[in-house]
Length: 114
Length: 115
Image 1 (tube, rainbow over the protein chains, first blue to last red):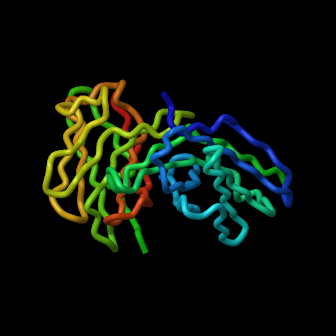
Image 2 (cartoon, each protein chain N blue to C red; image 1 turned 180 degrees about the vertical axis):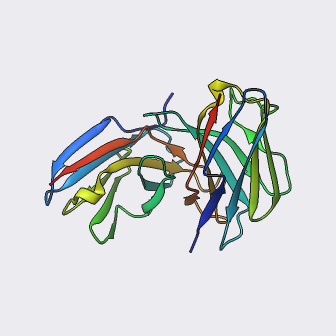
């Protein structure tokens, strides 16, 4: 049973438009959520996170929204830039259990076209 | 801050040999480190959780005698792929987390090719 799901394997948007990446989870114990960005042949880099006590966190062009009742989170990138083209992983953790261990989704490949 | 390095970045070895990969947290102490592998066009697969001073916790299906993990200090964890075979060829990535933090900081990865 996959506890973190990213149902869209790929997404293509035009430069300057908004990119919306979605993630669903099933484990109600998850209380901390993260997004990572990964380029080919590199390790993932931390992008933005959100605690379950919040429903929105913003950092520059990146905003993460959390809907706890729906067990859904999304990452908004606006405006999208060609350099944003990468694989984006959603991750979730239950901070009162195995500290630091996260469950990852399968990733969504974002392509931003110039 | 929160930089994690891996060495080597790329290694080619003959079948049957052992390969050691190092993961270091450069500017922070990591009580917990994680080892992942990633196959082409696939997600990150967690192999094991490495805690400083104790035995690693392996995920289901990962052979602990095949993938030896040592976390000797708060800044260094090593993964040794023993008696490597071509099917072990993969991209291995480590990560480290600050104590009590849910955020992981990843190394740049090690590409292993077993001939």
